[in-house]
Length: 121
Image 1 (cartoon, rainbow, N blue to C red):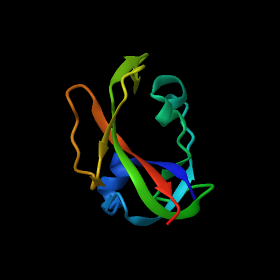
Image 2: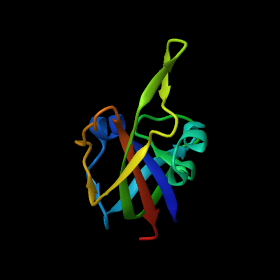
Image 3: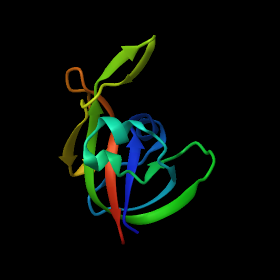
Image 4: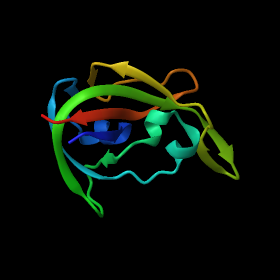
C-alpha cells in the first residue's frame, strides 16, 4: 500500500511509538478530512490520504507498510474573528530519518506533526 499519512504531534506525544525510515508500521488511520492543505500548503500536504488515530472515531481502518519518508510539518497561525487558523502559505516540510514527537517549533512556525509516506513492506 502506498499512502501519505499525517501523524499529529499531540497523538505522537500522547501515545505514538517512535519510527524511522525503513520501519514497518501497523497503524489505525482515518481518512484525511481537512481543507487546510488543499488551499494553504505545499502540494505534498494536499495529497494526504490518512490521519493516524489512537483515540477511536468513525471510518477507522488499519494499514501496514514500510516508512519510506518522513517530513516534519510546521506552520504559522493567524487569528480571524477570535479563531486561530493555519496561516496561508506558511507550511514548511523538513525531511528527517526518524520521528519521536520531540521536535520543536521554529520561530513563529509551530510543530504540528509529521507527513509520512508508507510503501509496501
